[in-house]
Length: 315
Image (tube, rainbow, N blue to C red; front, side, top):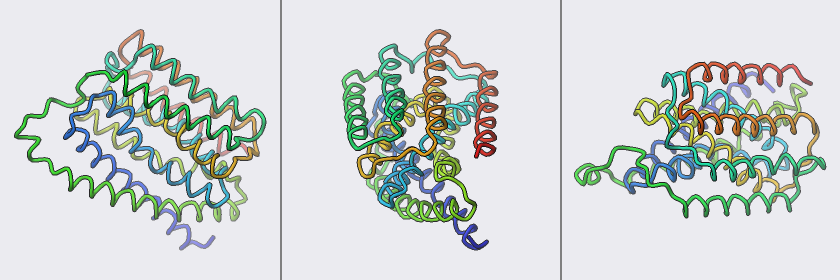
């Protein structure tokens, strides 16, 4: 890969970042306009919006016959979500109040979905049947969330005069623009990532983890935005929602399109298991203490850096 190709690759990642942020902003405004509950916005609407980069990378990877890139991207994105994104949000907010976000039933359903791919990966392949199971789990999870919607306000109640100033068509149009930019840029990112892996003799799984730095930026942007608006608990909901979307919807679709042959089973199992374990521990801690303290944020950021260093050193 020539220098200009690498620069173009970085530029495409920048477009991926920008378009992801555009989606977050437009869907957040639409969520406010429709006055959706905190649970729906943070776990479904915003989580799906911030996971669209992984979604498009996953679909393009599968269509290009490089599904392993999608798996690496999902493992990396989930690990960065639960460590770097959440850790930075906790530090920036000087502690997150989680008393209105965690429910016992949510913990159980989330745990089942996160553990499923770990069990599926033990035979060295995530097959089309596995993908179908993951997609089915995602659908049932969404139905469960909608049926048990928690009527808690995410944003301050919108007065009629404020609602009238919101133009839903404008923000829906911005959403379409962001989605189109994501689709185009992610397609090129996949192509360049495959070329990069070949040039540097890197496994596609590792390159997928590197790409995850770009695809998790929307989560970072939304976390800082929610904290600055004094709704820091939404960042926790977005993190867990993004993980569920990544591990069920995106991985399921990628496997359904093109089964994922796992080249490095221990690495994959460890990555998936570590994310699930950390998510469960944080959820239990949140449920019992109702607040994530700053020391935990620093610990999570340290784990993110350690994860990146280990992935960079392991061949």
